[in-house]
Length: 207
Ligand SMILES: C[S@@+](CC[C@H](N)C(=O)[O-])C[C@H]1O[C@@H](n2cnc3c(N)ncnc32)[C@H](O)[C@@H]1O
Image (cartoon, rainbow, N blue to C red):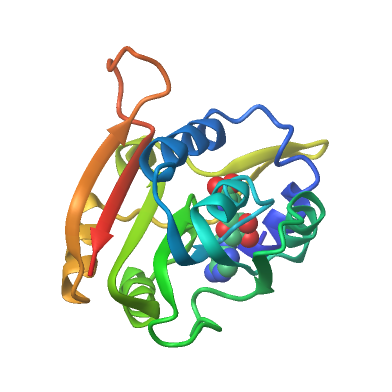
């Protein structure tokens, strides 16, 4: 199943399914970005708006992008903040955002579905104003090496969503190539014991 169709299918239960990755990502995003206040935010792959509510507090204006109609429909129903605009957009195509139109670009659990990291950092760099920041929180590649991939369950069985492995050095290399400086890299586990590979990795880059 193609990524867009899979997410539109998943949208009906995305918020209610048991999902440790989704929940940890929300906690991480609150912990890292919660104190920030900026003028303009672009959210990449906003999904059902799980993190959009927080971003609507952080940013005076938020432009939330996603290519799944089903996910966006849920997000629009949930988030009625007047400073949030939801837009249908495929992140593998030029983003519908002007040059230097954002102070913060945020992506959560979306980059694993995109093959070309270089294009994502090029577009983020184009859209960020001087002094801007880019925050990404993604499935840790160490988990992907062991086969973990976004998936959900339907009556007909498990639906596994197409994904790409980006090594930590791929993120760092692509970011650096587009003029970003790494400010912070953190690895995250769902429990206090660090006896297995981290579930998530987060990056904060500056320009
Ligand atoms: C796992 S969900 C994450 C949603 C939200 N960021 C969150 O953390 O709950 C991944 C989202 O990325 C979107 N997505 C994946 N590939 C995309 C692309 N090429 N362009 C736009 N959205 C994309 C999907 O439609 C889906 O809503």
